[in-house]
Image (cartoon, rainbow, N blue to C red):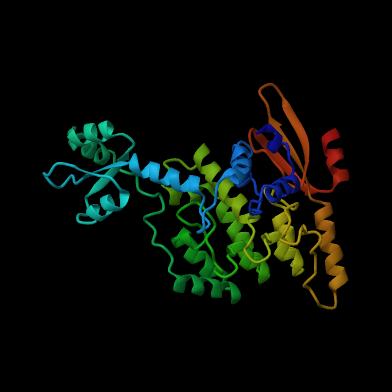
Length: 369
């Protein structure tokens, strides 16, 4: 596990390719999931591949050993079918197909598989009322966002059209009344552009809407807004801050489907100076993420910008990336500790203050002072 934790994003991508896994986008949220998948792949028994050559293959292309295993598994299978709504005794079957066919006769029917006859017989003879009562005794807590209606595709298309027409007030009104325009019920950025699977920041960056970008970033950082819609009792608690940080990180760094580009990629590619400046001011923005063509946002600067001031805008945006340094002052148990962090890779535990973004030269001056 520690071996994968120490790897860079590029090394993790190479490891995924080596293992034959699909190359997934790597963010702060998905990194641990990818590491777990790689770890599970590494500990799989290697004997499965070597044993494949020992199988005898029949005329239909199926191994004789696999057929024998299937027959043996089926012969050792006992399925008990039980209907809680009926007073009849549970019935025992020898195949899942028979049990499923019988279970279709009643919506309350259930079945369970056993590997020995004695276990199946013991289960079928035992009273089942306690199981039914236990399963219904714990009520599932409602989704915190369930009180807000889901956004229909037609309404989401209308919401996207407001971005195109640059109607900031209408965008604000819809989001404040229903957060599901930008956040889903599973705490993930809502998809505004279905084909490319772009969230609100993707769409605003593509259309060069800096005011809408500023509103989205501010609303996700507002713990009172987060607490109101998640029904937290107190706004200034750890859970509200965690939700806010996670949603903001996903909104900033989640790639879209077409070219695996983050909002920063899109803003830099189309020469949107104001939006690039806004995104780089966010400590959670990761400018080192790469798109499908293995390019960072810095490499794509003004690649789709074809106006007369192309070179001027490109140089201005490049300076923004060079000034992307932050000074983090973290509060330890005994003293303050200042740390220079390039690229916005920040651990928010015990953070007392953030200074930046600024140039590398000014960073060292601030630390010395």
